[in-house]
Image (tube, rainbow, N blue to C red; front, side):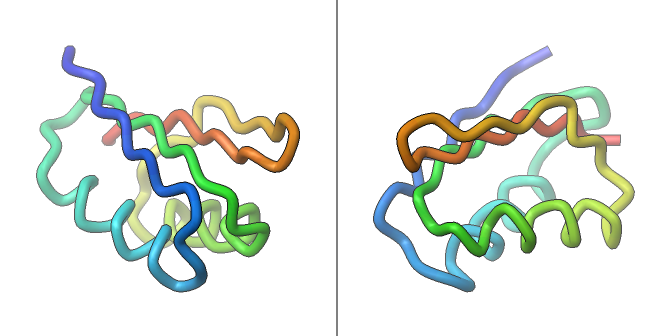
Length: 74
């Protein structure tokens, strides 16, 4: 299953979540997208987006201001 990486460092709210939503629309079930961003609001916005879409947050982490989310399309 393909894995897409979105490098969204430097983008501010709401752009990271909008780019993530667009990427998820283009994925097949089971595909993975890894989102890398620096906007602290993404820690709230992306999990809320996934509640709305039903997609699965496999992992999330924060390292030196870089937020990384691994999301599997449901």
